[in-house]
Image (tube, rainbow, N blue to C red; front, side, top):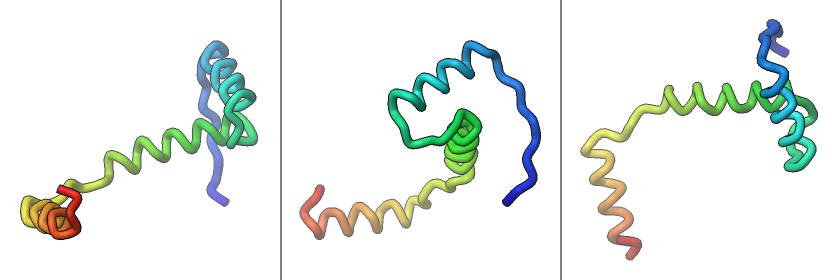
Length: 68
């Protein structure tokens, strides 16, 4: 398990996150939700877009499968 650090957020935002968890489920606590959201956002930024060549290969494959 990774070392943890303390991060402060407004009480209003904390309460909204807590309410979200109570209504939607899927997380054990607010900290787990926040860690998940940050991880998703940061990993999204790390994704590299397809090259033009790769994008064309994908389109060609989708055409051959009848999707486009």
